[in-house]
Structures are given as C-alpha cells and as structure tokens.
Image (tube, rainbow, N blue to C red; front, side, top):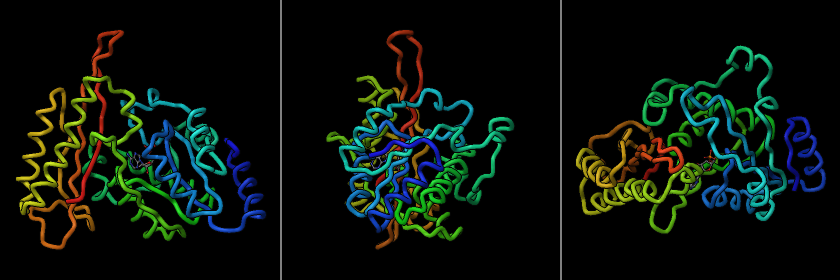
Length: 298
Ligand code: AMP
C-alpha cells in the first residue's frame, strides 16, 4: 500500500496500478481518525473494486470559523495501518496546500460547488453555513483527481449523502455513489470520529440520541404517523440524557429531504437529530460542546 500526498503522484500511481490491475477504481473519502464505521465503507470498496483508494483529508473549506478544524483528531499513522490491513492500494493524505492553490490561502476563497440553497439551508447546513459547499467541492475534486468509478458514503451523514447524490446527477459526474449503513456501538451510539472528544459522562448523555431515534422507530412501528408526536417523544428522550442541547430533530421524506407532517403508507421517512453534548475538560475545568448527528429510517 502507498501513502501519497501529492495529486500528480496519485495520478501516476493510479496509472501504474491500472496497467497491472485493469478494472474499476473505488474511492472512500474520509477525514481520518478511522473507526469501524469508516472500515465498513473501506471493506465494501475493497471487495467491489480492482483498485481501492481511501482519502484522508480534514478539509478546511467545510469548517466554519468557530468549528473544530484545528482540534479535529488527526491520526494518519493508525489510519494507514487500518487501511493496509484492509488491503487498500492507496491512502491519499494530502495537506491543504496540496489540494488548494495559493489564491485560496491569500484570499480565503476558491471555486466552489454550491448546491441549491433549499437543500443546504436546513438540518446540518443551517447551523453550518457553507459546510456543504466545502463538502461538495472537495468531493468533486477527489472524483476528478481519482477518476473513480464508485465512491462510498455512510448513511450516518444522511444530508451529505443526499446532496452528493444530487450533485452527481446534476453535474453529470460519471461515478456511482454507494450508500453504506450506519455502524453503531453495541449500545446503539453511532460511531463517529468526534466520539473521541467524549468522556464517560458525556458518552452516557450522547447515548440519548440513538435512544431517541430507536423510540421514535418503535412508535412508528406501532402505527404512529404524525411526525410531531414522534419528534416530541425524541426530544423528551434527548432531554433525559442531561447535558444535552438539541440543535434539530426533524422528519423528512427520504426522496426529497423535505419536512413532512404525516408519514404516508409505503413512503419512506427519515428522522434526523443533531445535538450538542457538554463535556468538562478534566485538566482545565473548562466546558466545551461536542456536536453529534445520527438518523434512522422510519
Ligand atoms: P468522515 O471521516 O466523518 O468525513 O466520514 C467519512 C465517511 O464515513 C462518510 O461517508 C461518513 O458518512 C462515513 N461514516 C462515518 N461514521 C460512520 C458510521 N458510524 N457508519 C457508517 N458510515 C460512517
């Protein structure tokens, strides 16, 4: 397995591999700090393609000024080991300067892929203005650089997956997007690189997010179709977690990502939650918040 930083080196290595192993190229875009959630995407990519590439890049254009870009966990050595064990061919781990040109660092601006306002100005995009422009831009760049045939994305980031599928359709990217199910801890907590910020107490509180989703699903299975009832129940569960601040709890149509009041028979709906968990730093005594997201199909 090769670890590559530069775009040109990546293109050359892909060319080399293609000459010895003709077939499809699979790509798993990640920000690193890899866990079993990422690994499920990586393994699927390995199984389904001749050449399997994992990118590890904490993308500055998708973080807001007061977000955790600097603090985001960076564990490239461990990530590369996991990828090697999974039989990946290339880990592409560029620095921001390998990806964005001088103009970006001087003016803090670059050419962006901007999905329509209606799809980004809600759920995660509402609290994170510009986030999905940054995501689509880096993902589009990675598609163009690798010329991958298939790219693997987790349903954990459901709005991201929806927006990327839309981008691929509307900008005619010649790539298949493969959605992968959410991987959870045995107690239900969705795996996330940001879980590393949680201490034991905060982790217990965070568990209320998946509990809220499971409860809503249970009620739906019992026949509740009014989304407000399901949302109110979920909110009550999150509040029970203590130390939590809900950013949003919404139910949308899987097909359109638009809010719905009633879940119609045979129509798929998705409940999405974002919540912040308060964590106390044991060294400084200072408090900080960790933002977590999760969702479930109802
Ligand atoms: P990230 O490194 O957080 O940008 O995630 C990279 C990819 O892994 C995205 O497509 C995520 O949706 C996916 N992913 C992250 N956590 C999970 C999880 N618990 N289950 C499934 N996919 C995940």
